[in-house]
Image 1 (cartoon, each protein chain N blue to C red):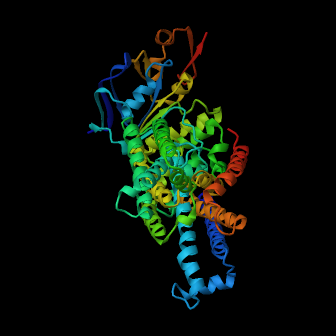
Image 2 (cartoon, helix red, strand yellow):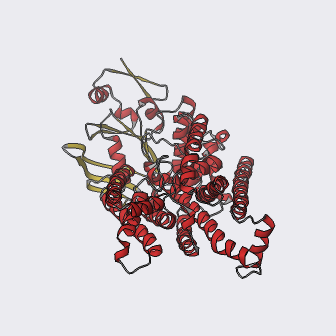
Image 3 (cartoon, each protein chain N blue to C red):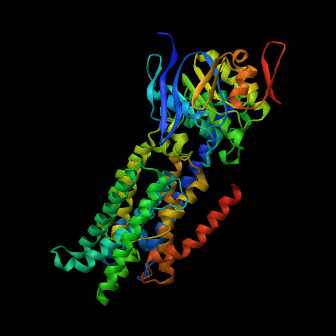
Length: 247
Length: 351
């Protein structure tokens, strides 16, 4: 059985609102998927449904089986940490099931590698409470990576990051996909970041998936206009990557 | 392994050693306080006398000193240490599971319930064929667990969310406070005096029995809390974060809640309510070693014990006969200490 995530007629209803409307998609493992769309389109709900955080109708299968929570690394939107823990301690908590009374060399080594990948090595001894929102987000992403998930679901992980750390985080995610063969789904608002980095783009609007495919195919002026209700100019980099600018 | 990993490893171990040293220092401080508490008293024993009597055992040659130390002072001091440790541990766990720095073992109405149980036993105890020195703690213990059950039932029906727990606890607290006030209103002056004396929280009520019971509950709870150390630490990062790390936060809250109830019930049922220790000790522990519960839990216990024994020492210095209840000392001294800690921590970490 090839590794893939299958969603079949997945619907989420709360009170009298439909948050996710009859979503059917297939995503194979080993790629970085960008989940885009306007606010309230259902991106977070889709991620929560896959992570098993919200009840839904329809079926969600990972590698042919119901999603096993131990394989999932889910990072909800806007995680704020006010705990008096250092960055290193926070990363180690990603493996809390495996940590014994005395923390082992391997676990500190793994944390050290991830911190280096994220460009945060110099923050290892800093308290989480002294970090900026973006730095905290990056650390919490590292914490998920400590668990080596095969299915990584990220809700706006790059939204609070500066340009350098956006690039570092996305490079890290791409390397993680290449090395582990995981499926990474990341909700993001920056379409150009999505176009440059994602293998596949999943576009949502009003609780439905409206477009699905490579950025060149999805980011057509018509599609963008109908999704975001604004006029958008599309340009192109020499390598064919689209750049979209609102006009 | 890379060079940065090695240096990171080294700095992590160094921070760990520093924290262990902090813990060791607070244990040493507790020992000094314990000895001071044993020496202070109306009989005028010197440090040498106390030490010799301790070494001679309960059947030592000096009958007078042996009786004073082994029958009166030692059970009181020991109960004080165990009660303080229980309140400190329960307080830290409570603040962690409620994610609220103002929570204490008494937040959810446990002390009000214990007070009502004791008042009930003092008022109507004469009708039952049980000695009052057993009935009162038993009633306080039972009523605390009953209050815990009430909060549990109300809160757990809504998924053990922290806000619901606090709301249910406040409701239960007002309920038992009114019942207790009603008993006090109806009581005769003699009974009223007994009730008020019980509520003050004093080590004079302690005995070897109280030390054994509080010690047994503490010994039972410690390994269970130790097993959840990492999960409790992760819970400090917020519900959503902890949940996404695969922690069943609802179940973690439930079992921690039961342990807090047991620790608090045992701590208050013999000596009465002693406020502020369960609130201050956790703050002190976190300021000193951070949120790693492997260290902050034991340190909260040691700090709680040290605070209670300090209160006892201060009480004995003010009134050598030991008539000044520790509950009053901790309440008066606790307020400036709490404000000092809050101001100190907020200056360091502006929100």
